[in-house]
Image 1 (cartoon, rainbow, N blue to C red):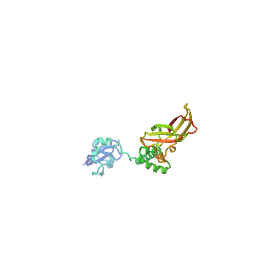
Image 2 (cartoon, rainbow, N blue to C red; image 1 turned 30 degrees about the vertical axis):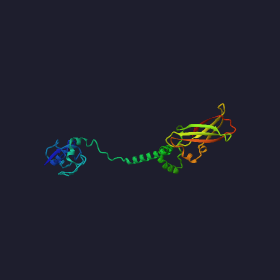
Image 3 (cartoon, rainbow, N blue to C red; image 1 turned 90 degrees about the horizontal axis):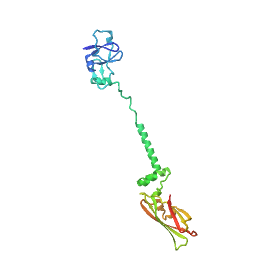
Image 4 (tube, rainbow, N blue to C red; image 1 turned 180 degrees about the horizontal axis):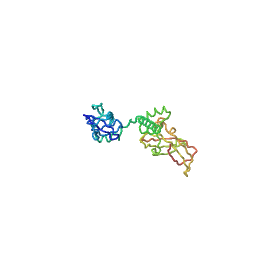
Length: 256
């Protein structure tokens, strides 16, 4: 059984089978002007005319979901997909044509992060080696290839002179002995500081001054290489030839 319907847009009439109308709730597309309309609501008289030879286009009304067999052709659209809500919104929200590729950005981000991490480890290698001693061998190996070094930290605010004394040596005229106790308040080893000694006369006027570097006042070169351990003290004794200098006082400072 077939029904004659007329396109409300261009007036062209068609024949549609009952199965076609039921499959799509009466929704069809005009083969002449491509307008979609409800064939049931636009039924026409059954008088035949040459216009009835034009086809009713049922394809491409809505996105395909499953196959349904009809009398006229094989349609890949489900009948339930032609409900009013779907029909009114089918063309309002089309699917994107393609999904943008995000992996190049992810790879670039990882490479940038690795570069920033390498730069941070290079510029803060001294601090990292001090706070994370287990990483120091790796940093030393890397610095060997980059022709850099990893010196011991030297924070003067965390290094102090706990006590000091300057006395003459009765057995050696003109020789004075400087005794200094250094303390490292940091939790990690630090480089030994420079010791600046100023000798003064009775009026506290400087009569002699010298800066002693760690290699001059440490007896063991290995101590100089390993530094003063964290939260440790070390007492140093240094004999100084002060013959010809009438000194009765002194000042002592440390610096890097």
